[in-house]
Length: 115
View 1 (cartoon, rainbow, N blue to C red):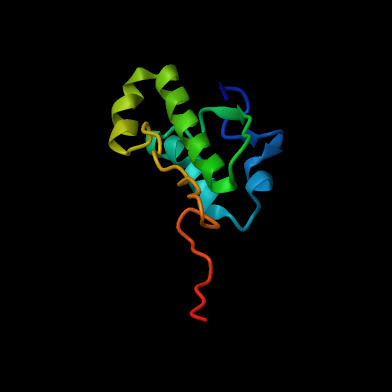
View 2: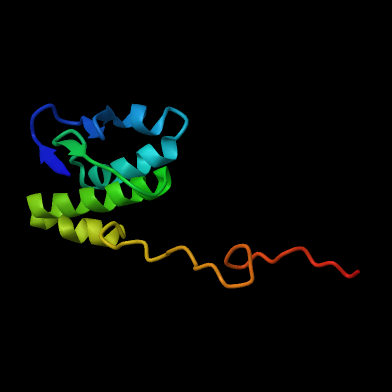
């Protein structure tokens, strides 16, 4: 991820504009990505170029938000207090539960047959 002061306010992910990348129906993901910039008031100050791989679009939006918050702290240390209070500098610790033996998924069971 890189922050630039040229062409301020433009967010590009994987070579596409943020709206084109997430699609017009996914406003929630776009809002998650823009949240660090809106909270700090730097939404019209920086342009962003990012590369997102792996996971789904929700995970990528969360990863982008964390990366953007960390990049803003590197650019201006005074923003750390605001971003920390908003909870944007901590990673989401949830991970997928492992598959258990004898089951089709982690908790799902095969259909029970009485006879």
